[in-house]
Length: 169
Image 1 (cartoon, rainbow, N blue to C red):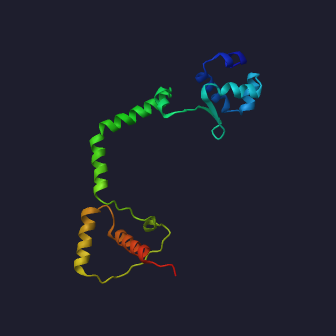
Image 2: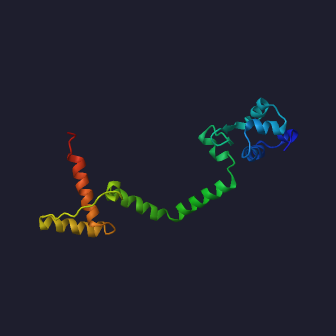
Image 3: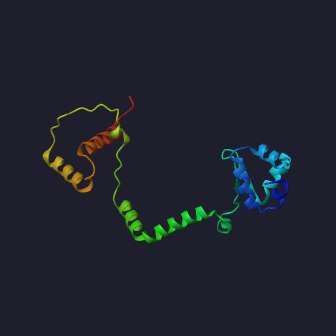
């Protein structure tokens, strides 16, 4: 790209070209390559709401209003990805609704990451428990959490109890 082409080309295409040049250079280097004063270069690049994001070392189109989202021209790759996601949601809408309602109806058990700590030291303990209480607990685990180990569920119960009733002494 040369100086004349820079000033005459479409701003979207220009931003793409400049971003390609910025992969191997900085703003001042690109301005020098084009033979344009740095201040003129940056001023021209800001036309039609292009902004430079330093951490990305790239120019991006600035969107001023949410209503304008539909009028911007996203890249084909972004459009394709969005369309694929939208199609997936449409095709699986009933399943997703069912999943959300199931999660909302039943409490979700999330084991604390301390339960799975690979550096933890494990001990074996024999506990004398009320048989009816243990049977109730065991059936609950088997019916609602068959994918979890009973020892992990007991550890979670102990941890939850400790967290709830422990006082900072």
